[in-house]
Length: 78
Image 1 (cartoon, one colour):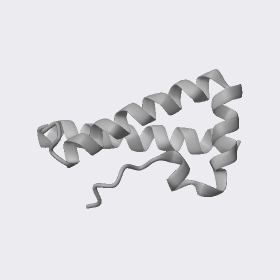
Image 2 (image 1 turned 180 degrees about the vertical axis):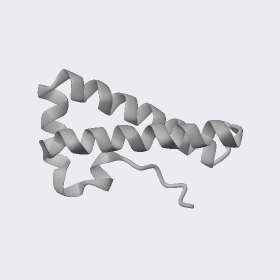
Image 3 (image 1 turned 30 degrees about the horizontal axis):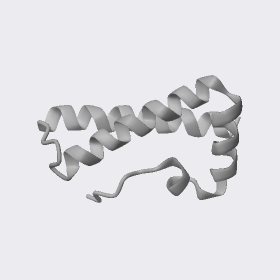
Image 4 (image 1 turned 45 degrees about the vertical axis):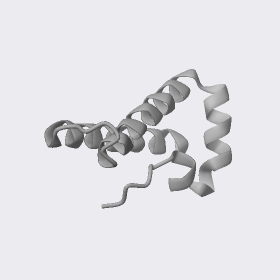
């Protein structure tokens, strides 16, 4: 398991410009991207034991992060 944060621009470098554009032009996308960023940071803090979290809560956060990422990716490719 990697303890590297999953930043959208790093995971989708080919879409980095579109991510930036959509954050500025689409309020719904911007809100979801911010939610993704917050949950991503929480997962990273849990994985690195900066903020120890029980295993079930950490799994739930990972599932939410994956669902948000899928939604954002779909919006980027719509």
